Amino acid sequence: MTNYLWINPVSAALYEGDTLDLAVRNKGFLPVQCQENHIEIVREKYRKAIARSSGCVVDMRCPMAAQYIKEKFDQPKLIFPDIHPILIHCARELQKRYTEDGAVLTVTTPCASLKLLGESLGLPGTVFLTWNEFVKEHKIALERKSLENSPIPPGFFDDFERDVHTLASYQEFDAFFMEQKHRDIKLVEALYCEAGCHNGDGILEEVAAE
Ligand code: SF4
Image 1 (cartoon, helix red, strand yellow):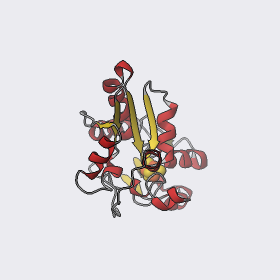
Image 2 (cartoon, helix red, strand yellow):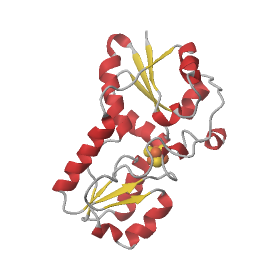
Image 3 (cartoon, helix red, strand yellow):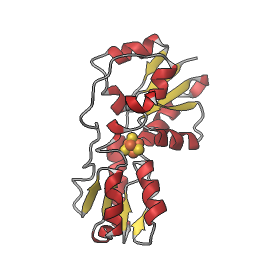
């Protein structure tokens, strides 16, 4: 049985050169990449969501952020489009390509919330693990770099022509929505972790050690 592995971009950025590639191959995994440009596919879906919405579209790429905003501030002027995160788009493509004939695809995530979302889809032959879970389970103890930025930093929608506002941490959510600032814009980018997924609970080593 072949074990395929998708290493999310945040996890891949934690290591120098090809050390990670060699380490996972030594553990019996074959690393795979997406062929489709899911970043642009997702951007285009948001362009269309904005065009057909009369309120403020909420960024759904971060499940934690979307859930927090929906539970606390749901109202008619906030639109929660049915658009999956980029990681889920990637997982769906890879699942179609690599899980025939009993092969297993492991998809690594930067946080528990993306893992749970992936698991909720019930994709055949596909396992979702946070990066910290994966390296612990397979005893991969390579030295990690400290990441200053996420590979997909805040500003994902900056080239949109319409009004967009970025909330780059959950700490910015309450004031923004309580002051009704979403009423003046077409889309709110929302990331739960400070400045993006390099601070996810499936990446940070101090979280893993708790
Ligand atoms: S790592 Fe943090 S910012 Fe990225 S999707 Fe998960 S909760 Fe959101």
